[in-house]
Image (tube, rainbow, N blue to C red):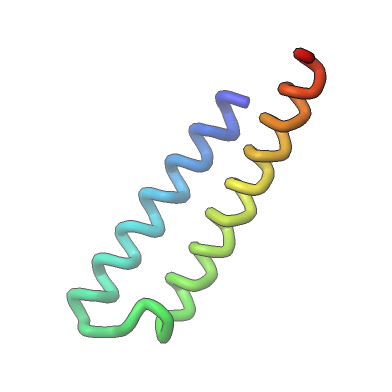
Length: 61
């Protein structure tokens, strides 16, 4: 779980960097395919993390 959190943090940092670069270039985030792809990666990792937490909570009960 810690490894997944580390990966999530790393991918979020990449997303933030891409977003900042896009905004500096005056490119809307929704028009930047790199930002959109990175956002999908982050969303996928968040979903995986939520699933793991839900499973752990069910086991703990």
